[in-house]
Amino acid sequence: MDQFKSITYETTGRIARLTLNRPERGNGITLEMPNEVAACVERANLDPNVSVIALAGNGKGFCGGYDLVLAAEQGLSVDSDSTVSPEGSPFNLSQGLYQSQMIGTILDGVARHTKEGYAFQRRAAEAGFKQAVRERDEQFGDPSFK
View (cartoon, rainbow, N blue to C red):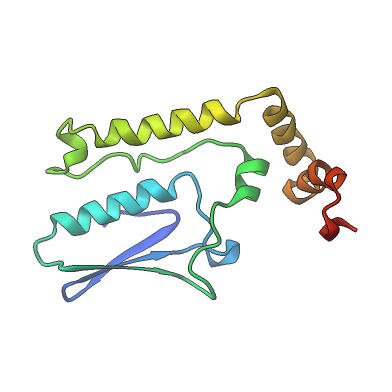
């Protein structure tokens, strides 16, 4: 069975259950999580015994969005081979799906790689994400910083 860092996969009868499994961080999305979800969905699609895919979050909430603290404080690297697709997957049949996902990543990278973006990333790594956001946004009079 595949080992995932941020989700769990199990089947019960004809149901494949995918559970976001980072309750300590509000099930925040990491860089590897979309690839892990895609691998689980692909696995369920290739299983003739599965008819339904259920997606849930472990803990109090479903998902708090992207884990910005993790990205800002630990950098943006993926130590996962979760992009490897199972045999029979359209990801392996040169259908363009993987390439389309990659271009989205590239465009996102181009949009954030500016002088200001790099300075914010450095400050977040030094002082923590919340402090870096405070320093960045305080000048605009956000009342939550008073």
